[in-house]
Length: 252
Image 1: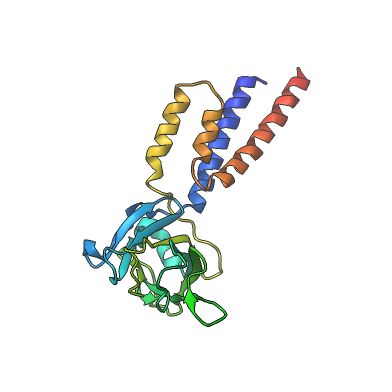
Image 2: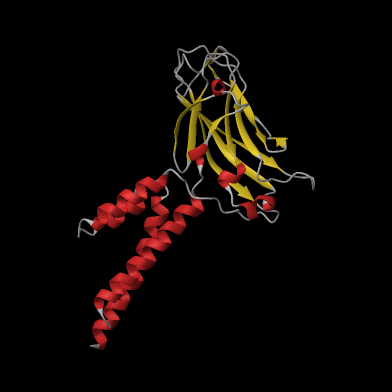
């Protein structure tokens, strides 16, 4: 068997497997933006295939980060969604900050509100409140229990910090990550790939075309945080290709 054909086929299958792994785990946060048609409702800090990071535009103001359901899911999959969960993380606390009553919020999830969450400060032995960690995470979720609760092409998810904490002057950011959708049987509904990754993939492909070094293909599949899954897929496929190559040599 021609070794070049073995390597070529293995590389093609490996690339397909890696892209499938990325698409399965990614969330298209690329178009996350402000809510209420008002740019003052949020300041988007960054997005990637796993999360959106945002903060308020002024101290005491609610921060509202909006994303359209159709940007996250294929149209034919919208109605399949019966529940969802995600992680909310606040970063940037220091022990000398006034903890107030804590921070919290919830999500307007298309047709209903999420369960919501509240993060309370820590307390010392004397009962004094303080932030004992720089980062706090909590899970929020939503369930569609009624037949009328169905995602559609014009559905929106609005992630809201409504605690009115001084996020801006304290350099506190809110991160929404690990967003997952589930059908009525509890199976995860596949999401669209992160649109912002297209440019990076194109750059990686261009780099691969201009060099014969093997690591170029690896960097293309491990440049994102879903790269571990992609790398595992590639490793498995390449192992099969290696076995095929050995068998081919033995037949000669």
